[in-house]
Amino acid sequence: MTLRTRILVLLSALVVLAGVATASVLHASARAERRNQAQPGGPRVTAGPVSLTDSRRLVFRNMAWGPHRDELTSVPASDPSGPRTASRVKCLRFHAASGTGVCLQAVRGTVQDTYRAVILDAGLHVRARYDVPGIPSRARVSPSGRYAAWTAFVGGDSYAGTNFSTRAAIVDTRTGRLTPSLEAYRVVKDGRTYRSADVNFWGVTFTADDRGFYATMATHGTTYLVRGDLAARTVTTLHTNVECPSLSPDGTRIAFKKRVEGLPKDAPWQLYVLDLRTGHETALAEPRSVDDQVVWRDDHTLVYALPGDYGADLWTLPSDGTGRPRRVSTAAVSPAYVR
Image 1 (cartoon, rainbow, N blue to C red):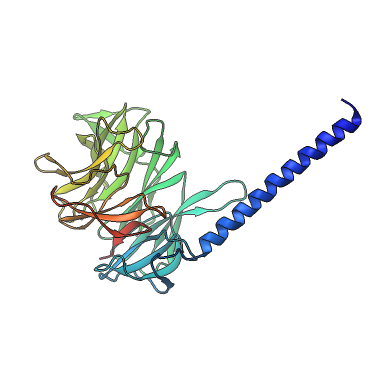
Image 2 (cartoon, one colour; image 1 turned 30 degrees about the vertical axis):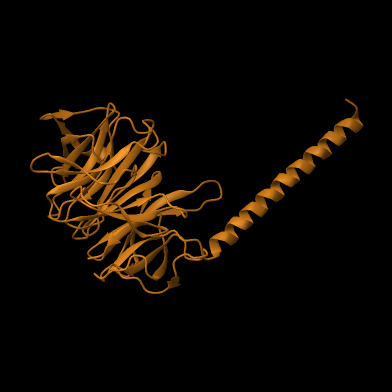
């Protein structure tokens, strides 16, 4: 190859690279512009105060395109599709109870993003920050507000397959004492201490007495509902094939997603409710696969997210297996009925 030919090849490569760079900048600019434009026909969102103690409100992450995308927003609990008040506090995952909130956030970096859990007071002011070792997935606050929990993917990025690893943490919001991973707890399985290097935990849900919690534990390809003891630092297996449990307000039932044979590998779950006293499972009237930790609006009604045009929509369903799904809010995820 002659020197002239080499120079022409080099110049051609530089032109191509410049074109790619320009296209990338234009794409990023268009995406940023889209994020700042309110979606046509979407919900009305305006900035304003958001409180975690107003029992008449529902708070969630706003997914509507515009200047308030990803912010915690508040709507009347009686009108979830009504006008939204945006807080300017951004979260990837969120939950709240009794004036305490947990907000899982992305911290944008020049090389890669990192993540953190932020404990919020009733006015959404930051009380504490904790590093999160992976992509945020689940968040819960105990009914009293004393404890908060979160789950992150530290390997893999989906519950649907088997090649993933999670880390579930619990913090005492009064003392700041953090348990970075439930793997530090002693596992009791079939009445005996159980040890395995492949144990994973996710989807914590707390009891009302601030003494216990439920969660999912996975080991050797099987998922278990476990009951945790915060004082004894133990978890005990109770029931198989339970993922992302959510305890009912009266403490008698667990809503969960169950892996069902015959469904697609990337969408394998259906919603069920487990009676903790009898062990009876009730299949719910939601035919679609739900990858979410549902929220109980009350002792009879569940709320959960399904994919939508702008990321996710909120749906509601009776907890007794009757009725049919009903969409209550578009472009929304991570709901919390503040009490």
